Length: 248
Image (cartoon, rainbow, N blue to C red):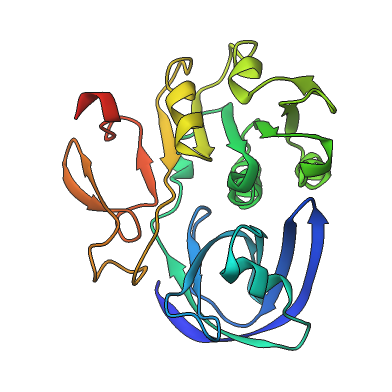
């Protein structure tokens, strides 16, 4: 449910290399894991879309990477600051599709929505495994928090400085018994994942957005069921819907 309001920052701190966690207080529109917020920042024309990590009846939390002027400004905001935010955006993940043993796959800045997704699945009695990919040890985050939920967590690092050396797809070759997959991360990771997955699943797509709620058509993509807007019809899409680049 789309909702616009002012939300108060209760915490904003660095949790990994270039990664910050922000918690905000206030009633919101989030109902499903995988939805996102769109944040208005002073001096910038377009809002910044950020995936939601967790939410409850009191507020919600975001985890973001500082990659440009907008996220750099966010990292400088202090406790007590109020932000104009659109909440409840996007369609989120469908946990009813998961089966008994879902596999969560995420890379880098795609990791945050896996927390609420994992919590929701575990609350439904699912046996959850998560494979999280990072560049190096100093980039790793949310490992302990996911383990605390009861998730079986596997970490890969490109440089081998922590856990398994390689990419998420390297770890996936050992995962033979899963019922459905959910993923969030960069497009090159998706193109590699789709070559090794053994079930159907859902992908969450990232795209530059204008409005964030489907009015401007700036984030449209082709699917097997016609044109879709990533912000409104997505960002989560079933694997059976997606037309990959080589098919266009």
